[in-house]
Length: 109
Image (tube, helix red, strand yellow):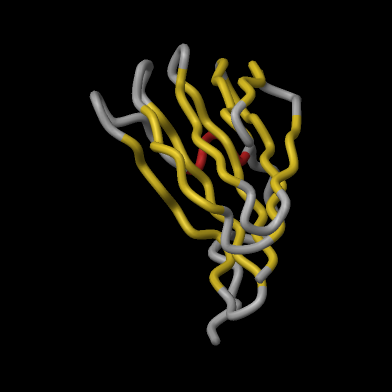
């Protein structure tokens, strides 16, 4: 599949600046979208959430801006910019934004 990285070289950038917030909703931007690996940026307006679902593969979360709560296997984990969290394959998880919240997700399939 297509693995092209959707970014410009030879410039400094911040992942959190690559996608906006949208009032009352969640915005996604694929940076890498391959068969075996995906790297996705997500922004959540405050109070927005992804309801519980199973991880399709191992995943690493990078909190980029603001504060959120990761629900994982029945427990809640507050997370903020600069922190990370890992999901195991098939791990049941949810994500809720406390403040406007941006994160990156690295998924290996």
